[in-house]
Image 1 (spheres, helix red, strand yellow):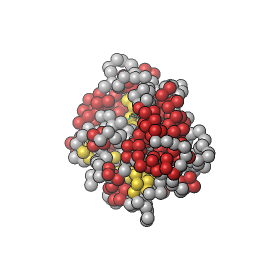
Image 2: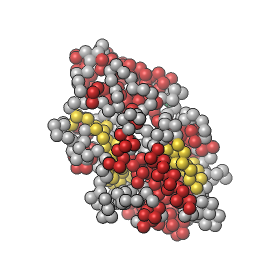
Image 3: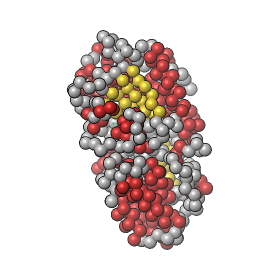
Image 4: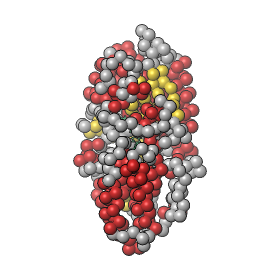
Length: 470
Ligand SMILES: Cc1cc2nc3c(=O)[nH]c(=O)nc-3n(C[C@H](O)[C@H](O)[C@H](O)COP(=O)(O)O)c2cc1C
Ligand code: SF4
């Protein structure tokens, strides 16, 4: 098992405070970077570590950091802390406990990029995380870790926290930049590297996920060579995986890159509850494939997944058992994507609603066999025809269920509706055949509130944490 690169100290009480964070080695990487390394050396080290972005696309971080043009414009660092996809909560947990780790990672990025300003873009509903981050930023300013001369020789860096209005689209990096500029979070039409070259206010910008930035202090402290020893060669290190659904111990676990779904569920999440039989799992959030048991032993790293045509996503595993209907799940996720579509592209705006209508036909009765092909075809007409990946993401649950659970579609047709009778009453997101859930995203409904009330109770793999005091 690799060391805990991110969560070694996460269970230490008070670790969210600067004093305690420092007592456990916090900010030593920033000190080392600024006092012993040039910005180029830090960038080289991050590139050599082969760190890849943890926001879902796994883009090589070092390559991104090196692609900022030298055009004399101000540079910005932006942490994507939106985390709005159903099932995802790893970043919010990390920030709740280790806000200074994120600040340290961003400050190192600021130092390497020659940026003076950074932003953390946090989703609007995450009030507890907001309070923790505000306190941490203020502490860092008071201690001169952030501020006009924090790197010495007149080089300064500061971070502002920006609360979004709660749109999933604002997690897409160009939508997020629009929102930061005070506009609606509409995705921008872009070539690759857009944010790096034409980011915030049209200036070079590094946008990275919270977990991505949080890896950087360890890499600076221990070196790229050490980092590459863990995980898989093409994607070293560990990753945070948050589990939910039919597992005995849902929680956030730091596990080596390349861990399998079987290990995540049975070794780390306490297995499935008594009487539950595995039916399917979503390996990385709502926009990833709904997979059957045959993929339980597939290593969860970007290359192993893409070799099968799967998306690896943002480290959130949702497990379903024999009581759960995969089509109801596809429908529920379809409603999420439809509600969150920003409406710029017709295939996404209208297509996601058609997806919902078709999937609902299977659930409520009246679907024919030809509707399976129609559903597939509809997805094909959305994929690659939209500005951002949300439209495409919406097609992943329907197409993966058709691909792996076609019998379920046929069973729904034969039964004249959903043959599973337990999901409406058990549904925590309020899905009901007659009732649409209100606009907004299912996982964060105020009345359910599992997200804000449950964070402290989440178990984290801590058996390797020598310093844990609780
Ligand atoms: C609809 C949509 C929502 C997204 N939401 C998030 C998010 O909440 N957090 C995140 O880090 N990346 C999100 N992404 C991916 C970002 O656009 C971007 O790839 C990521 O922030 C880059 O950081 P990384 O290289 O560190 O992964 C989203 C993408 C799409 C298409
Ligand atoms: S794909 Fe959907 S969410 Fe993305 S820009 Fe187009 S309409 Fe908006």
